[in-house]
Image (cartoon, rainbow over all chains, first blue to last red; front, side, top):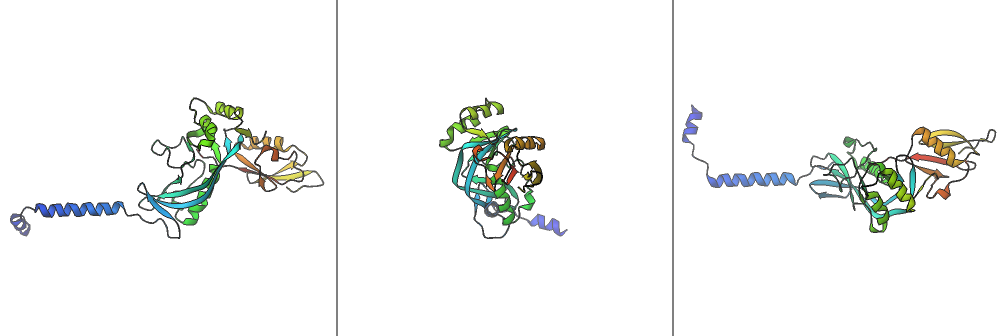
Length: 200
Length: 76
């Protein structure tokens, strides 16, 4: 009875109030988009990029000096060295770990990545990462060191996008040649004097 | 490597496991065989604690050297 009376006496909502209401909702939504839950406490560098929260996990040199073709390990005759390499742990807005990303983008990306990931996320391959366990700075830094260590080796059997500096263009061009299979790439690299077997 | 003077054996470490080898055996051939047996295709070699950066760094035999092979985790 009371409800019927209320409905009967109700007036259409003011357009001004509706607009204010919409505006307020939009403001709250925007605010949510810019709010991140910190994955963990600690003294660390962080940044927000591409709607993700990045925690600096490794900052130091990067070395790529080996190659594996699924049978043997080879040494690069000229190691690729990058003085300033930063690896970030990427967390979403809820504070869950998603991936590792690097700056600068350098090295090799692998076929396990989707096109969406190509050229951005780091494929960690055989490294078993339990995302839920990366909930402390110590854990993140420890696994980041493993990632940097595994970066030293180019895995020829699963090669996708190759990003290497211009001074290593000969190596980059052979690695990037989609017309060559693994065996042909290994042979080309040996013939070009770019690699040698670790156990000759 | 702990060289056993009595029987000429040496102990090396391959992917965390201790393996007994003949101290006078060829490092290259023995490691090739061991790695094939264990199915290890990506690795690095430490000689006396230092990582081998060139094949020339590899000694001929195991005698008087501490040798360790560490497995590499592959990306991809």
